[in-house]
Length: 379
Image: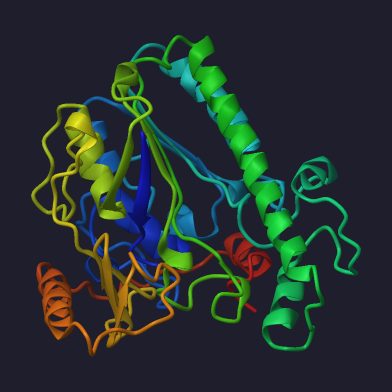
């Protein structure tokens, strides 16, 4: 099943992943890279619920902002980050490698129930595609930019130190697309592995991302984490239900990342913890039957907020009609004051629905710090 409009709750890795795994908004789960805060103590996670239900649980991930330092390992029997290995160079963290790392664990699980969470920074700056994949995404670039787009190069472009020439932006996008192709191939390896193990048909698979990437819509290129416009909040979502039920269906209604965990539990026939804020997606006839309001903010901030439905989006006093203006360029708040009142009220209600989390200070170890630096998160 393909979902056309899926919204993350933050345009950055840690708070967005924490929202997926806890079904809580960032101010409620407390995980924030900017504040150097981990997951709030006592917050229930999807992995904890599944482990209590008898599932073997494991994650093989790229570390950095999803390293166990931040508390995202709660409930996992096995939690392996790229920063735990001897090879930590960015670019070696690919979906192909995460699938290869997970294979021995999957074989050991046998036919028992399992929850496997795979994560990669492959589709993330810096963009370091193989020449073969880049050639499939691009023909005839004659500019001067390299085929590997470093964080430092993007920083120079975004500060005005390096001017883009005709064709340069398209080249950067091609390197990004080539990284997507690599992740896609790695995902195909996971599907083939599950088939070889005889586990594909009964397995529930959720394929998604934590945030988008900006490519010049508001000026910055190859960037995220600084605005709540849709280029940074819209994410893919493809769901394969056990037995291939409803395969090929498309859902147009908006879905939120806090809905993932309750949906997984519902499909498995397990009770959804009352502290979860999201709602299970109703897959009957491809319909969704939950509240359509999605709230997002920037890394736990209580000030920069946005709320959206499938049609409308309110962002810090500006209102956008997404049906008529999907690129969010025309503020129509003066034309629809009733919509603004409704959306801002919904936002306030959702923010007040749970207690705001206090900061949970964490100590970032040296190898994680180095990876965060390579990813462009620290100087």
